[in-house]
Length: 573
Image (cartoon, rainbow, N blue to C red; front, top):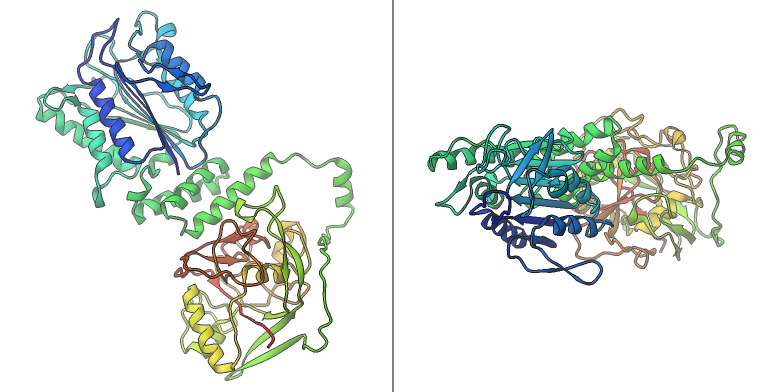
């Protein structure tokens, strides 16, 4: 997540009464943003230095009408930030509300010529949204107490996708405090953003609550009239937005998740994408609800922008009577007559482990351009150099109980249900005991082995084709599972006889996570010191997009969830 800021503070006015501490306010906020590690902080005050312009020259930062209009136009022509990033705007100076519009006054602004010499907050937000960040925050300490029209009510405007926090409510004025050398609002704002621990102001909600209380305290202590900061959040679901991810607690994350779930249910996919991305950032990538919700939102938005297929192509597809034939990838299959096509491991007490032989060969790993998430690209060829056996089914609760002597599952409905609530490390403990019992070398599949076995020679989204409407025949997922696991083997298998490779529960792989997996993922698992491991296949809780053959996610190795389990692999000796 990147953060940029534009900070403006004006003491000296040509056509309005000058202020004492607006430049101090701007310097205070500039210093905070710099210490917080913001990538860019643009700084405009009465005596601030020039900055380099996009065309290679230099731009004056004296906050005149011309300089500010030029900066907002030239620096925000092309997006430089991305979804998940923030742009923070801070203004300390005079503001005027006229005919329902808010204006910020440059140093040469004329209250009698607002349209020509002032800058509307609407124009500012329009330009700032061009930066590419999906969140813009305005802090307006612009309702100063000098002059008859010097800013009463500034900040009441509502702008799409923007959080506005003004220094005072409509019909109030804001005050400078001589003893502090700052406006009371800015002093309280910087103080609030610096708070650490359980009383921090990581969210919009807590920041608003703190400012209302603290500004009133400061004004009363210094014998100034009451002043209540005023917050406008658009959309309202951004009220729980996490501004400071490093300070967020689990309650903050859970509240934002509820808003994200609500946006998904309402099919507001742009908002859902933004909120899920924020959850994922605050959870440091460890929240699989956020991973799935974000992937679903991206998938829906991509489909909304995908052009309709030509009619001739649509006619050809409709003539297939609903049957989707998987696109085949030629796989080299050597003679495997000397190896049995399958075998059954007797674990004792009538519990069996069925294994299926997978031939060696090559395949295209990952998703083609235009499909899937960024971490599935680029699609690349992988050679599986040795045959291996893989579990016909996901490891069941009965099998786990037989080997480990206990059942950690959350859905304890029967021995034939998949085991879940097991971490990657738990799986390693199971494999160690399984190998002691059988004398073999069972392990988790590598990520490449898993996808190769799942595809079974296909290169479509799913092992049965591309039509997600058919997924209910082959998988338990969000659309048909009823928020629970189901017995293994109830749905249709792939062409190599493997069940539940899509859905029911996620499956751990042996590999540690690598974003650039093009050069890393071969048959041999990549294991390093990373805490992030790979899971594949989707689960009962997953959207169809998440159950695709190439979909990949990276939970912490210690994660235990109601929808993560595994299946095992063994290489012929």
